Length: 106
Image (cartoon, rainbow, N blue to C red; front, side, top):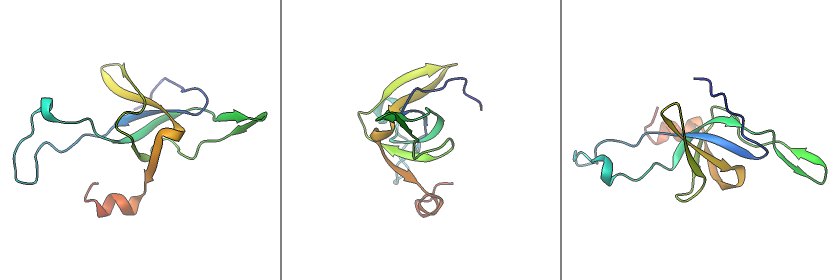
């Protein structure tokens, strides 16, 4: 999917990844009881922050899976899809391929 939005400076556009529908015991969790996931996929990035006249590129790229804090960023809706815009400094970690396999996610 191509997003026609380009974040400015050090901002990142993120699509939240879906949480599991059931708990470990097999109990189905209703939508009203679910917390929003803290893991997402980078959909678009800005050009980078300018410091002392030089542009500093971002450490993340489109397609990276990331973890972010619970109360970070701003929620927006584009074409009935929910996204999150946050600053690069609000990203806690990039999830690598090994970590994805270890967590059981594909």
